[in-house]
Image 1: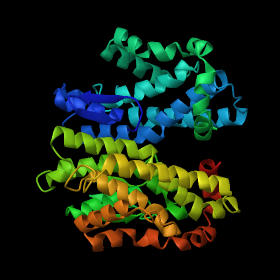
Image 2 (image 1 turned 180 degrees about the vertical axis):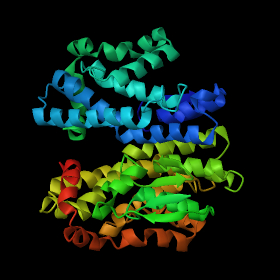
Image 3 (image 1 turned 45 degrees about the vertical axis):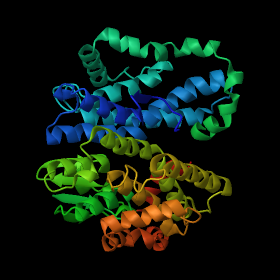
Image 4 (image 1 turned 90 degrees about the vertical axis):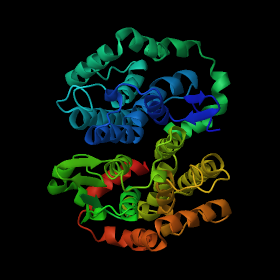
Length: 192
Length: 242
């Protein structure tokens, strides 16, 4: 009844919230330890990222996507430059923290191996990329991490998962803005 | 174990409350947010994110209250009762679902209402525009509706018959605007009844002790006004209020 995606239904058990779903899947299918390490401190590092990201990269990356693409191109509302600038500043702040605090000089967020934290991070970082903003430009550390994540997941799977978002700039040209008008007030209130 | 806390902050109250409720020993290290202490060089060495709470266990430093709670549960698993973070797959998922959802909902909205009522006038030098205040309260009400209708339903606690991390995470956030004189429990008997159950499980005296500072928050604006760090703090708050 939260009416958001993703949602999981396993038998008659329904679950919302991607983080909760990831943890459920890791536990139920007893996935390899590195995804959500049993080690106290390593697990804490993953949990720390999973918690921090909600009000940081998730919010800022998502906002860029809305401000650059959906609001102007689909809703037909002009976005003031100062709002765009402020959103970019916030996004840059989050990306900086990912590099300096969460990655530092480690190959992945938790250490030597990929974990849920890297998955959660990469998908949010890719969101503004879908709107045509190359967040990896001028960020060699972030780019190198992205390459490692892609390799660990498998490039084909990675590209497959991002096909929709990377096609956004084209997709919005075909979207019927009139169908979205009912959401307009809420969207504008949230982002503008 | 050291916990760096300012009891005005809901996530700080959360880790304080849980640690005390389950008997985890720690040293309370006070960080005065209204004095900008979190921007000090000393605190920067503890955490570069410059937020509270921070846990220091030996040489291991951990931020993010949700991560700290889970760390405590895991480290002290032999003495922390299962119901706090159930081992059962589906029950644990329900706790995680709430812990995830709350960041951008109850936490964000209750925090915004609190900041608008308690801090806005000091920072911006004027009263909160009615439209802004109304919108913030409306968002909070919608979150509270979802808390009651989706997460609590007709259960005693969020997960079922027993209290879990989800209940304390929820309640300490809802308490935030209370000290500014906004009674969010008014007209919500289901929520009030749940609050009483949670307080009883945690221990009423402990709960009240944790909320002593926030219930006296009326004096916060004056405290901030007289503080030499106010000019430094202003731009940081202005960003939230714009």
